[in-house]
Image (cartoon, rainbow, N blue to C red):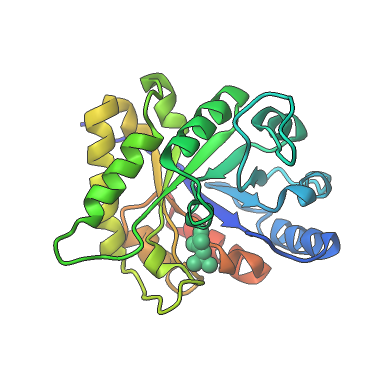
Length: 259
Ligand code: PEP
């Protein structure tokens, strides 16, 4: 059977960091300098909204910008919100949706579903996060990830599905989780196979073009393991993306492993 090559992608989620625009510009420029020879890896940085404009002015063809949320609506009376169209018009090309830290603030699968639909119409690539907070002996976490996928992707047309990136992020492995544990590449592999199976049953062969990536305390020391043995098409580092050297190292590792 003909194998589809999926270009690998490394996405940095800066979360609510750093504290000043100067630091944001310095971090971004240093990464840009360090990855100037990257060819085979897509690179995305998702800063807080307010740094977007300044970072877009730093010239680099290697890094695309994304955001960490977007409002599912057109212009109008939505105090405090920023719409998918505004973000696309500003220059953002990706949007992280359904991150566990936003779900913890009350975001539901149906909210995420609306945001995905608006993002696709606006032209933003949704990076949809799924993942369980704990693992149990009866493996019910598979059911949880299945319902997250089904509810978040409800009503998405088959011909749009390949534009979406799924990020598997086991919450128990994220750096800020108390008593966190390391996930293994095998944990990631088992779940990415499961995710692809659920999605193929629902959306068919287009799913072979979709990228499924992994996040959960990935750093420059274990990136190669996850990329080589985790069955994933990329990584979503949080904390490690705030260190230009570590983040660029992860990209170099990915580049070296890409065909
Ligand atoms: C995240 O929360 O998306 C994440 C993967 O963070 P970290 O790499 O810091 O665990």
